[in-house]
Image 1: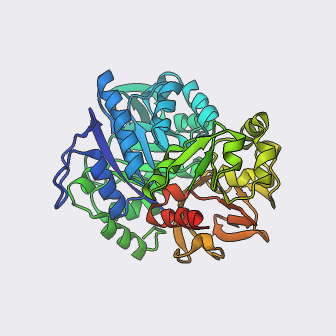
Image 2 (image 1 turned 45 degrees about the vertical axis):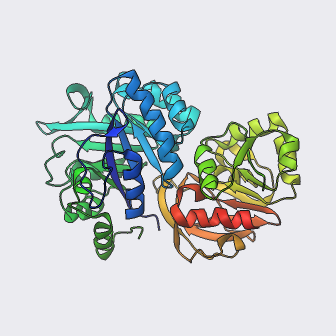
Length: 251
Length: 193
């Protein structure tokens, strides 16, 4: 049986992890390669690296980091942040990334999704969607959630699927950072109306939140950052408890 | 040992190279017919669409070479599918090494299947040291049907062949290079053949 995936997300700036990471016995917490290896050993099913570098130099460093991660980590990983062309993706995949995630660039030019899935296959194209519920309606935001668009979450999600996205990473801005649980109602709607896997993001705080997003939210995978980085939830404990709750999980 | 990864412009081969490097083997990318013919072990990778990949193989003459190879050949993911008779993906005629058809998963499921699934009914030295129901990483929309040449099965709405073998030809639907320590065991077993 296909299992649900647990995905730690690492924010990277100029080749270093940004948000504090608080692993026990970990000396070099800023090195994404060491962290990635550690997460793979701790039972993470996949990893996401989000590049928040603003400079060209930072982006070059990202490619070097991807190459090192691919060399040392033998689980799949996705790279996102600032990807806007076929050439960007080509460079990342050549360095060993398994998937890429696009967000703002796909909103600005939706054809990008078609181009990427035609050239590289939909299996490596993740479309990240940040959305916020305003007056009952889920509105897509871009540029890290700072700019409001006119797109409805469910319509946009349908469109990206049609254009060849292989997966959707949905972050609820209402839930992100709250540690009060994932946006399960919206997730369930995405998961039942679309035919591609949905990754839940934003709101993870407790083990129960993960149970809920896989059952009520019908998510295929769940992504989180701080609860893992700060050791609030140990991945193996989480996975054991998920399995005890009859959720298919890799242990 | 000379390990060659067949280069026909298909997908992400970096991870395969790195996985072999961890096993102490330098896997070299090549599309040179003589180099491939004389290698000790051959990896046939593939990511993307079946019809496009077949066209690329035909243009380079690799479609004639691969079925005649005598040394151990390991097809991975689309590589395995291309070694089959046919694929529903773009109605493609494959290399015909494995006597089985490749079909698309039912639309009632999420397609592609993406993630970790178990492999069972293991029956090949390719799986030495790998236990029944071990998890492997898979990303695919098409599958090979259960058949006589199957050496492992998996289940995604339907039971399908997760690995195939005929003589010196091996194929795995999953990505051993992305399946952690257990996947590395399978690559090591292939090197040991």
